[in-house]
Image (cartoon, rainbow, N blue to C red):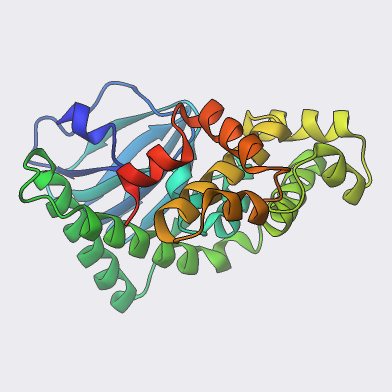
Length: 278
């Protein structure tokens, strides 16, 4: 299942207190979001050196920068653990809702009301079921899996808003948040780091240093990832020609767009559309 799972936008695990494999060694997990929902009992884990403890009906949203490890649990514990690629959150146009979590070093712990907890439980159950069928291509409903994953992201984004209200950020974190929000608004027209630095009244060098320190990525890398994500979305979901897409993304020509796309994805726009388009 590992080879297949590597191609998915998320991994889904269900841990129970009766499962001898619930405890894990350190799992490398750079740049993935973790959504942990406890159905019952107590679940304990470590994320990048910070210990977390979750109880019944709690939802934890965290960015794993390096590793996670499941530490302990009681026999009554039942917990869903979903590891989601940041690229998927960007692809479904939800990145702006998670910028603060991306920048913050804090894990967000949410206690939904009874109704929302039931909604989360059903979404998680669906995700786990679909993920289990992934070894059988004839049974695995990939569209249903991605739809359920999108529902989880939307629900978590809605739930976390009030929890972020009291989060404080330092100057570099605030600058990174401002840059990422500005990028989401202007990425189609503006591909130059200089534009964003000017809008934020800092030098390009300082902006790059701040963004890299906070996210681990350069400004150019952030711009490139968002452009590629949008290009893939347009190639998969629209009938626009490559030339039209290059114009929408403000490339100088279809040729320059195609070269950019192939350099980043190792495939041409038309090859990508043929494999993944409708």
